[in-house]
Image (cartoon, one colour):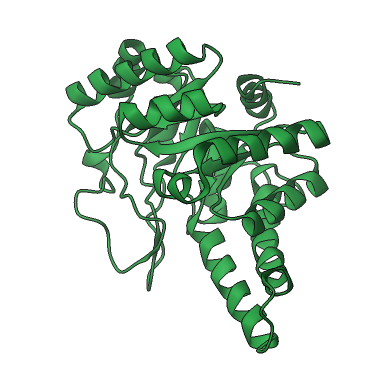
Length: 295
């Protein structure tokens, strides 16, 4: 089976992106896998530190491994937003395909130092694991938010620069890069999320020369997604939209089955709601009957 890097290179050649979706329960995982296998496109599953505490690192890795082997399908697992070397070590030992070390809130020099340590530690445990670095702070909450988080890089002067990206990649040895290009974690409650700086994406891609990851995808316009993919984004993260769909599905399941106590009889509406969101995003990211490529 192709590696994650092979999959991303193929996506880049085809001017599409791999969808990355976070989970914290089997209902969401079931929905995401169903959407991907129906469309026959690769996917990434992410678990943040909080999500891993709930699921368990080894349990998550075992689940994804079993699905990959059962369906002979390109599904990969990412230890999303990992902030300590201790957590990096656990994810590498558990068998994650990728680890995102998130030093995005740190000053550049410290981010480089800690990310390099994360790369060295990960690969000493498992040389096949890929390590992603985050350069620039874009918030940290996959929730419905009332305003821009303090310190989040949304103004042009705050965004990751091509020069910073080139240095960061060279000095850390990361396999993938997640820059701040106008993206924002979470979905703003009453107004649209900020627009992406497509020109900056293109500049960073040329300077970095490695696969790039767009975090904070929830709430981004379809047009910006298509343009970002054409400019060099190879993976797009969606979490808040999934959580919102899951919540609405659970509420519908409880409302429609007020006397039911069996979880598996309540969850189907949550599965259907999440699957609909994932299918729509995967069609867009893979340009399946959606908008044409941006020029």
